[in-house]
Amino acid sequence: EKPHKCETCERSFTQSSDLQIHVRTHTGEKPYICVTCGKAFSQSSNLKTHLVTHGGLKPHKCGTCESSFSLAQSLKTHLRIHSGEKQHKCETCDRSFSRAGTLKTHMLTHSGEKPHKCGACEKSFTQAGDLKTHLYKHSGEKTHKFGTCSMAFSLAHSLKKHLRRHSGERP
Figure 1 (cartoon, rainbow, N blue to C red):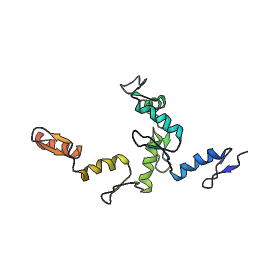
Figure 2: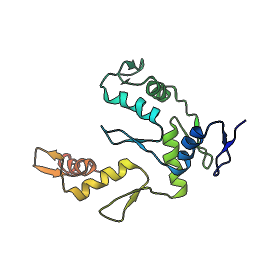
Figure 3: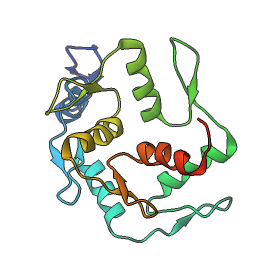
Figure 4: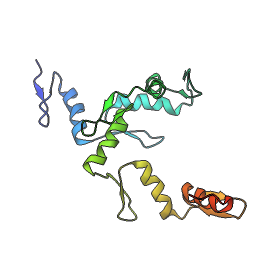
C-alpha cells in the first residue's frame, strides 16, 4: 500500500519522506548546496555523489578518447557521445539527446521560458552558460587579449572576429 500521494501528479509512495523528495521535482526546491561550487541539489545523496567531483581523482577513463571522470556514471553518460546513443527524445519535435539535462534545456525552446535572468539588465537566457557569457559585457573585464595589437575583448567571439581583420579572412 502507498498511502502518501502527490497532489500535483497523483503518484503514490509508501513513505512520507519519499513523497517529500518527489514533491521537489515539481517545486524545483534544492536545499542541499555544495559549499565548494554553489551547485544545488534536491537530495542529500546527490550532493554526496557530487562532492567526489571536487576531489581531483578521475579514475574512470574513456577507452575511446582522453577523457576521464571522477564518477562511473559520468563515464557511462560520456560513452553515449561515441556510440551515438540518444535515449532522451523530445515529444514535440522528435529531436533526441544523449543527456536528460540537454533534453530539459531543449524543451525550453518550445515553451519560450528563459529562466536565467540578468540582474544588471532585462535580458533572459535559456541556458545558464549564455547568461554567464552575457555577464562579461557588464563586468567590463576583458580577458581575451590579442598580443599583436594590444586589443582586448570581454567575449571570445569578439576576439575571433577581430583576428579575422588581421588575417584578412572574411566571415
